Image (tube, rainbow, N blue to C red):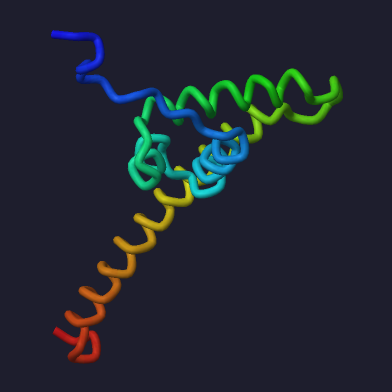
Length: 111
């Protein structure tokens, strides 16, 4: 087998703006790196690595103040997205339960 017929694809390079946009999409939407990577046609571990690198850079470039670092803000946002999804699920369950109970009491609450 010659070197020219190597089965591997050439390595793709992505411009920094694309990387930032992809990472921001993960942070903004609350989706996992794997979900966004799949949408963009990227390997999931690549997007996760970009996210880590960009957050480390942002933390290093942020001023030393009492404010939260970008990585801490991203983690808080991730937690908020998770909590919101849980609350929506609870709400939907309660709506279904309410509709079931209101159908049962169609006779005016009398047995």
